[in-house]
Length: 85
View (spheres, helix red, strand yellow):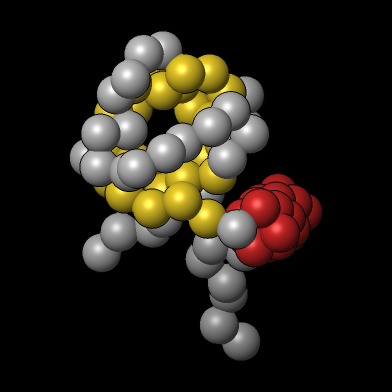
């Protein structure tokens, strides 16, 4: 099972390579499978390849949901392993 997290294009390195960023982590990714990718676009990456470009609003909504989930997990000691009454 894969979990796809939107990443934002931070820089174009050349015709087929981009630098992406999510949560302060930057990665070098091949953009050779997509027609056009611009700085600021959101993409889904699998195995080092950008495989799809995403709508900005949907990508930001998804990232907000992941941030909310992370906050709830930090707030509860039982979030990952709830106690059974």
